[in-house]
Amino acid sequence: RSCRVWITGICAAVRARIKGMISYEGKPADLISIRDITESEKAVDALKESEEKYRTLADHLPDFVFIHRSGILQYVNQAVTEITGRSSEELCGHSLMEFIAPESRAVVEENIRLRDQGNRQSTYEAAILVKDGQKRYGIVNSALISYEGAPASLVVISDITLRKIAEDALRRSNRQLSLLSGITRHASQFHRPQDPREVPLHRSGVPRLPPD
Image (tube, one colour):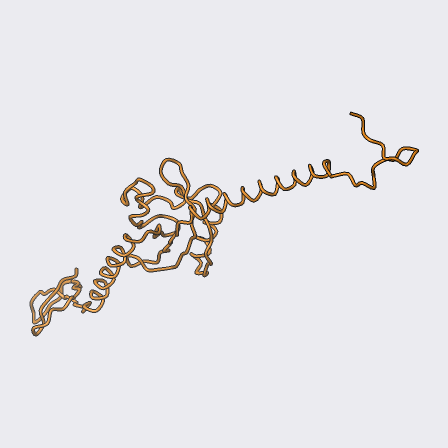
């Protein structure tokens, strides 16, 4: 087991293991091996401190932050809990795919597979499901990290829902303008002013007037 001992005024972390019973100076004794693990303990403490700082930073980001292993959520930030209406305890352990809209699942699954293989991925768009069955659209960035001492994937989704709504509204407006322009051009062909040279003449050479 691990413990801390004082050696010449210095506190050191050690791991002790009983190897077995031996005979020492003619008497039974325990053979114990002790290994200094001070540096590894410091590394673990530093990692925990780093992860705690990361959580504090991530919880204050407006972006949606997920950490997952092979698609299973390990951590979500406060922005995710707010849009889903569920606590981090409820979300962690669930599949990331539960929060991805059906039309985006194929591209997300493919990127997870490639990321797990160590491939560097470019950003892409995806739709995510939030509370009340609504959707949000985001730009997805991901990276491989170490989380709680094991490899994991960090996913950051930047919300572009308002931009998508504006783009869709602009496209609809452009389609309507194009349709209106086509109708106007078509109508003008049937109401083209008559060229005076095309006015029919009477045999006398006098322009024939249309009947009242």
